[in-house]
Every structure is written in C-alpha cells, then in structure tokens.
Image 1 (cartoon, one colour):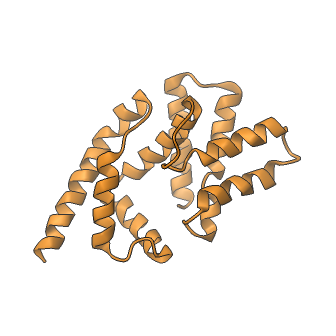
Image 2: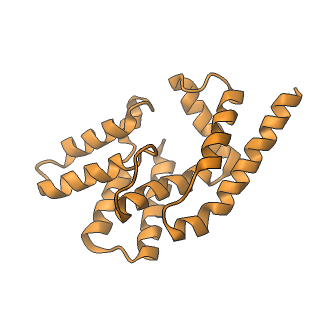
Amino acid sequence: HNLDHTENFVANVKWLCDQLGIDGTDRRNLKVAGWLHDVGAKDGYVGHVERSAEIAVDTLQGITEEPTVDEIRRLILATDPAQQTEDLLEQVMQDADSICAYANGMDTQRKLYEEFKQEGIADSWSEHVDKGIDLVSDAEFHTSPARQRAEDDRKQTLEALRQEKESLEDE
C-alpha cells in the first residue's frame, strides 16, 4: 500500500469506467475515492480501510457537498474485500484493487508479505503463501472487463504460489 499501488488502482478505476461507460459524477467520485482509498495505511494495514474513509471525510468536508463526501466514504469502504458489494460502483472499487493484487504475481506477493509481516498478520513466508493460495483460489471479479483483463494474472499468481509451496515443502 504505497503510491505505486494507488496510481495503479486509479488507472484501473479509469480503465473500468471507460469499459463500463461510467462517466460524470460517478467517475469523478470513483477517482477521488481511488486516490484516498489507502491513505489510512500509513498507520498500519489493520483497519486501514476505515481510517482511509474517515481521513477522506475529514479532508473533504467543507470542500465539497455532503452527499459527495458520503459517496466517496462509501466507495472507500467498499475496498474491504470482506464487504459484499451493493452496486456497480462498489464492484469497480473492489475489482480495481483485485487487478492490482494479481498484477506482477510473486513480486506483489512478496511486497504484501513484507507489509503483513510488519503488522504481525503473517508470521512466516510459508504462512503467507498458504493464505495467499486460499485467497487467490476463492477470488472472483465482479465485472466482465476485470475478469477478462486480470483472470490470467490471477491464475498465474495462483500457480506461482502453489509452486512456491511445493518448493518450501521440499526444503
């Protein structure tokens, strides 16, 4: 969760908006939410989605209209993968994040592991690989464009994680 991730996330949001015909206020709100969706990660990964939403509210209140602030908050909260999406805009937010998670395969997994290790979420590389296999196996994209763009990356990441697990078991 760094500037590179945020830039990629916003690029994915713009691409999904183009593919799905989302424009105007919805597109603007998605982009703003994309830029702010991980600002709370500066204080740690655990709880960062909620912190990011609150930072967005604190930052945007008084600058823009209240319904817009509420909408951006809702869209940021939608990036929590445990949250069920309620509409297309929330699906775009989750899919934009998922596309990032599978791009660059094991490089992304190693970066996530380092972040999770600092937070105490993963005690070992082996544990991270096991959790990654479960997460990537169960992952689904909400929108057709995201599925078409990133499904191969997801499959390659899953295969690389399985190979890494075999290699760890052989040691």
